[in-house]
Image 1 (cartoon, rainbow, N blue to C red):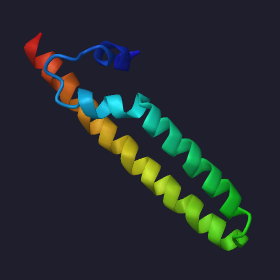
Image 2: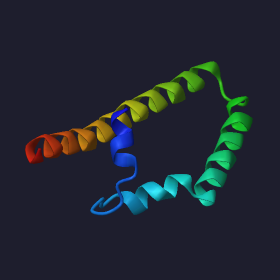
Image 3: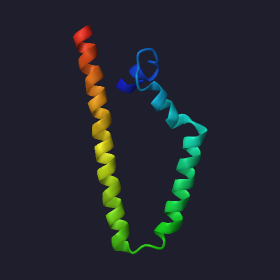
Image 4: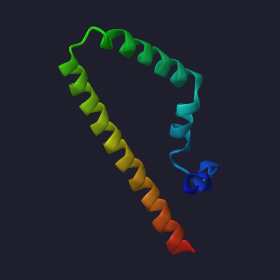
Length: 83
């Protein structure tokens, strides 16, 4: 997998400390608490509102995937140029 190649790259990786946040206990706890809040409160919403929220989530996910692809494309280009 392409990501594996960069997963262990610490030296020179300007984003490594930021990425480390995703494996922290604080982040895991925040995700758990957020999930519980969403599940509890989603039951109180109308089906129309749930659909609106689903669309917001889809768009956010699409944009995040584009963000990561942009970064990976940079590394692919840099690696090809430096090879």
